[in-house]
Image (cartoon, rainbow, N blue to C red):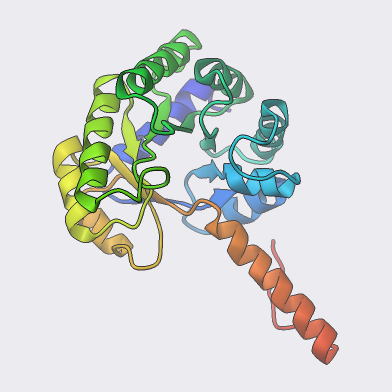
Amino acid sequence: MSTTADRASELLRLHRDPALLKVVNVWDPISTSAVAGAQGTVALATASHSIAATLGYEDGEQIPVDEMLDMIRRILAVTDLPVSADLEGGYGDAPETIRRAIELGVVGANIEDQLKPLDEAASQVEAIMRAAKDAGVPDFVLNARTDAFPVGGDRDRDVVIADALARGRAYLDAGAPIVFVPGPLTSDEVRTLVDAFGKQRLTTIALPGTPSFDELQELGVARVSFGPISQRVALTALQELAETALAHGELPGFRELN
């Protein structure tokens, strides 16, 4: 069985490959097994919003860190694939939360900057990468997230993009291998971000109206993920099954999971 450091190196390699890494987010062991069993899946990422919802919490670090990490532990127990964990803003101590996650076998993570002052946010990135190295995982794939859109998206669009650019460059300089800019990006904005960060350094989220996967790959994006969308799709299918069964006394067509 590969070590945590080996899986981290593999996850980093997948991000550096010119082929776009498509990562479907999971939230519990059964969703992990389903996605891991899909042809073409080479890595997994958790979704903090989805895990919180599963356990009855609102999004936004309302879930206790111990409960978040326990669900991640359960997820890791059912797969040998590299797993990146969405750890929100780090639950008050991002380097320590990363250290605990690495002990479980996590090899990458999203950490939100929550639009903290830039020097503070960059120092946090540096501390996270130092903690990962001290834990024996120098290739830990920190997906340094800027909340330029989620928190500051009500500003002028040019200001939002300029903020994302400044923050992303600072996080790369602080040692993060990739930068996550979740938001409704246009093709021109993706191109601007890739030009600033370098190819295979930007990660994005799949949203309606954003560039296609083929275009993202052509532009040099490292990875695209789905956040809570994958859980919403699953729950919509469940609701449709219930509605069909209750209204018509039959099940809609479905395929059994292997």
